[in-house]
Length: 215
Length: 381
Image 1 (cartoon, rainbow over the protein chains, first blue to last red):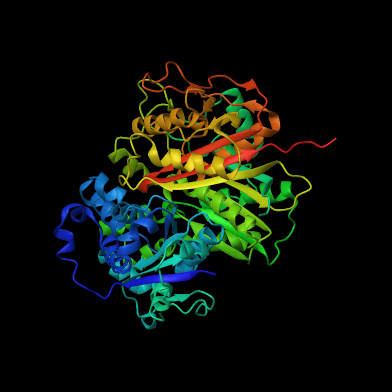
Image 2: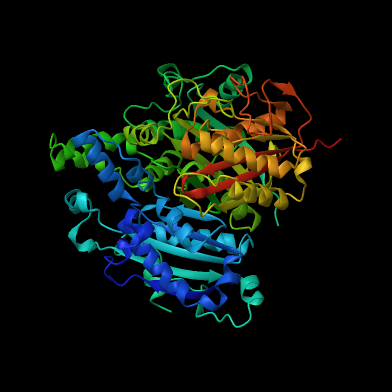
C-alpha cells in the first residue's frame, strides 16, 4: 500500500517575492512554481521532516521541462552569438528537480520523467516503484509544466484551443508501510489504491494536481 | 525478490554499428573521437539496420534495440513487458537550428512547426515504440548523464518487485548545436581526445550513442546478473558534483549493499570518467573512500566512444557485461600521468582478470548519481 501524507498545489500566487531572494534570482519560473507546491506540501509535515528526510527521494514529471530556458539560450545564441552557461544549466529537464533537491535537502533518488501527457502518471509509477521496493520510505512526487514565454506562438500551433493550456504545479508526499510505521503520529490523508483514470489531462502534467485535489 | 539478468546487448557508437565493434575498439584502443567530438561516421551509419535519413536518434536507437532483442531472442513483446528510455535531448538535433532561425526571423512559424513538433522527449519514444511494435508499460527518464544508469536501476526494481517480467532499457543521445554550445559555454569541451583522470586533462568529448539492454527475471541464456542498483542526489550544486564525492559514494555503497557484497568483492570499476576537472576529482575521491586503501582497477572508456550523456550509462553497461563474459579489464586510453590528487588505481592496459563483480558508476548534472553492480553468471557443471 502507498500512503499519501501531504499535498501542495501552486495556486497562481505571485512569484515576485520569491525571485528576489538569494538563489531564486537565477531560478526559472518552472523551478519557482514547483518549489511553491513542494513547500506547501513539506510545510504540513515540519514536525516529522527530519525523519522523513533520512529516507527521502523525489520524482518530477514534466512534458516540456525547462523549454523556456532552452528557448532563451538558443535565442541569445542566434541573435547575439552568446552562449550563457547559467541559462544552459537551467535548460535540462532535470534542472528543476536538481534545484528542488538542493532547496529541500533530498539526497535519495531523484528521477525526472517526461513522456507527453503521461508524465504525471509515470512520475507516480516511478515513485511507487521506489517505495514498493523499499529503496526509500518517502517520496515527493511533483509535476509542473508551463507555456514558455518565447514560444507562445508555436505552442498555439502545437495544441488545439480546446486543450485549455495553462501552467501548473502540484506535489504529493507519499510513504510506504515502512515509512508510516517508523514515524509515530504521522497520519496519511489518503492512499493510492484507486487512481483516477489515465489520460484525462487538460494539460501535460496535471495528473498529480488533479489527484492532489481529491484528497 | 526476483533475480534480474541481462540477456541481450546492442550498441551504436562512433566506433561501430554493434556491440562487438564497440568492445574491440575499447580493447584495442581505437578511438572514434575526431576534432574533440564522437560523431557517428558515415561508414557506421551505412551499416545500421535502419537508415538514419533525417532522424538519426531514431535510427541509432532502433538499430541498438534490434541487436539487443535479437541476442535475447525476444521475437515479440508481451503485455507484461516494459520499456524504459533514457535521453536528455531526444530529437533536439532536428529542431534546435530551425528554432534559432525562427528567432532570427529567417523562417516563419509555419515552417518552424514542421520540426518543432518533435520538441517533446516523448515523441522520440513514440517513434521507437512504433518501430519495434512495443505497446506495454513504459517510462522515459531524463536525469542528465545518469539517465541510462537510473533507467537500468529502475528496470531492475520493476523486475525485482514483479511489476513486469522483461524490460528493454535503452539510452540514446545525438550531438546537437544546443549541447555543443552549452558545454562549450562551461569551457568543458576538449578539442582533442579526452584523457580521464590524467594530470592536465582538458575536458570532455561529446558523442552520439545508443545502447540497449534486455533485462529479465528468467533467462536460459543470461549474460550477467544485475546484482545491485544505487541512486543518490548531491543536493549541492546545479552542475558541479560534490567536491568530496559524497553523493557518488552513497550511490555506489547502496548498489554494493543491495548486491549483498563488500567493496572488496568488486574486481573492476567502470567509472564515469568524463575527463572534466570536477567530475574526475569528485569521482576519484569517492572511489578512494569506497575502497579504503585497497584500490581496484578503474577504467574510463570515454576517450574511445566519447560522452553520450544520457546514453553513456547504457553504452558503458554493455561494456561491463562484455568484460564479465571475456573476464577482461578494459584499459583507459591515453593515460600518461594520473592526477596527483587522486589515489586510485587506473587500468592503463587490457588484461585478463577473474572478474566476479563489476561496478558501473555515473554522475550527472543536477547532482544525480547512479551505480550498478553486475555479477558474472556462474557456470554449473
